[in-house]
Length: 144
Ligand code: HEC
Image (cartoon, rainbow, N blue to C red; front, side, top):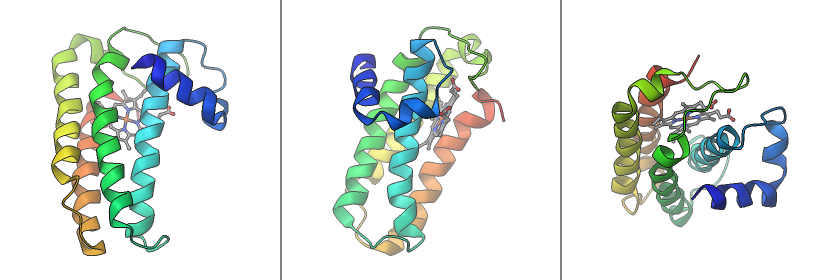
């Protein structure tokens, strides 16, 4: 899983640049996982905002990708790694069961929504539910 993400970083290049200065590969990999989540949210968000035309297949594919990425979160954070540029709070590793449960909540939410989106009117609910699952973890485990 980690290897797959690292390869994706090399393939896209630009994302790696955004995190220049991060030397720890574990920190880099988990940031890339998060960036991928944000990228998929942007796909859905831009349709929700009317900046892109509604594409049912693309929304459902983004939800599936979010569910897949969420399943990688526990392994990406398994090793305690801190970096000056990291926003991860040390409490993650004091309370890894809760952290993992938040990742699983995102996974099940995204997997449950995948395949259900039929019209642009469904996007508000999707943004709300996924956003809440991201925020539930960030509020406890990510520095603001
Ligand atoms: C299980 C916990 C958890 C969930 C769920 C989660 N995140 Fe994160 N996220 C984190 C942590 C911890 C960090 C800080 C990582 C670091 O800086 O080392 C982070 C960082 C980020 C970052 C900044 C990455 C960077 O480049 O430094 C973005 C963007 C992000 N998350 C987006 C999302 C989105 C979008 C979702 C939902 C689709 C989401 N996250 C779900 C824990 C989570």
